[in-house]
Image (cartoon, rainbow, N blue to C red; front, side, top):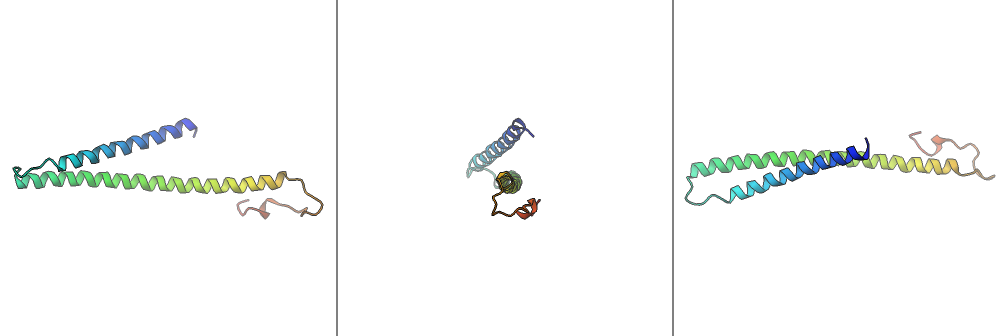
Length: 113
């Protein structure tokens, strides 16, 4: 996946979060629009619908947060692997001195090798 595709994916996620923010703000605004002159049954039904919308937003945000946390963990794992490979490369490129172990192998520094 190239940088352009990653950027597009990030934009899609940002747009989703922005849409959820807008939805939550609408819920807040709609919650405050009921005065004392509104029929109690109508008010209860409307507030129940707002509560349902808010619940759906909350669930969607939780899904996004879990997905991003999973991606962060996977990225950290790849970062650790990159550091391991960098160490391997550094040791592999380093000339062997007379006092160093001549039997160097990849498995001696990385269990992943």
